[in-house]
Amino acid sequence: MPIRTDFSATVEHISILDEHGVLDEQLAKDTLTDEQVLELFQYMCKCRALDETAFKLQRSGRMGTYPQNKGQEAAAIGSAFAAKRGVDWLVPCYRENAALWMHGLPMHYVLLHWMGDERGNQIPQGVNITPLCIPIGTQMLHATGISWAMKLRGIPGVAITYFGDGATSEGDFHEAMNFASVQQTPTIFFCQNNEWAISVPRERQMWSSTVAQKAIAYGMPCVRVDGNDLFAVYKASRDAIERARAGGGPSFIEAVTYRLADHTTADDARRYRDPVEVEAWVGKDPIIRLRKYLVSKGLWDDAKQAELDEAGKAMVSEVVRAAEGIAKPAVSDIFDYTYATIPPELEVQRRTMRTHSLGQSPEQVGLAGR
Image: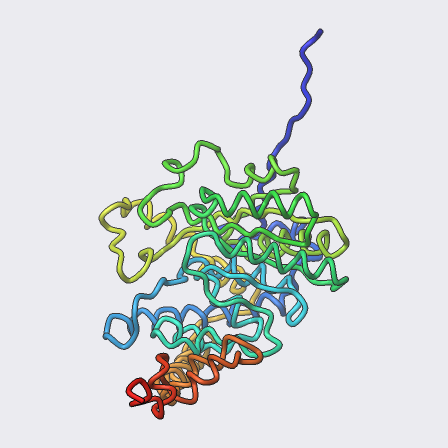
């Protein structure tokens, strides 16, 4: 019998706005208008300002460990802007702050989370977001379940789940991908490939030349994009979301970006990253390239930037005040946010603030001697 090829595949890479702010007009057609880009650029700058202030809060002892989002804003914003607020679900890791805020999460909630206040995870009613996920990869299973439920109920929504390149080495990733493809759930698997899984470079944890090609094994459409290119991220996300909403099943997007800061404030990336590599990626900063584009279009200048910086400072101050000025939680809160209807045994614990029977019923004292 002759040898035949039963399967072959390619992975496309989309880049529309390069690091010099030069736009491919043909590919950019029907993506983002100048008005939208201007709005998103200003939003991106404000998110960067809050991110850098969060770093200072940690360094001054006012907040716990914090993972900066610096350099990855375009990936979060471009994908979130393509989704429908209040309809679609965002299932994050912990470098998607800008996306969460765009979809209705109060900004100070993220600060509360890293300050150790669980009220930062108490997502407001009607905001289709799950709490920040610190365990690596578990949120992908949650997103698949949410999207499957929407499909079964006939809800026209999709679930976008975010994760890093390191998470694709976890078993949870493969289980979620397999289930989503078999059930054809409306799930968007959005990988922020920032080249490092803490201190492990991508080439040391996988032999594949791209992360996106892992989706091919599951019969899932996949694409690779310049993750610092707002236009490319938006286009890939919009196409995947539209396909999922129309019943076309899950998709995989690999956004190639870079973590400009340390993994978290508990890390020192200077111990394992070449400063030449970091400097090269600084030049690819999504905010810098977007500003170059706007300046070339006559839509931005130094005066407008100065005005935006002042507005950003005022916004950041207000957010920090909201987080640090929140009233102390009540002890009963540990009972009130788990069950819709509290079980009788927990109601007794909440009323008495005791778990042992003597504490709950003091009148039992002396009964044994009667």
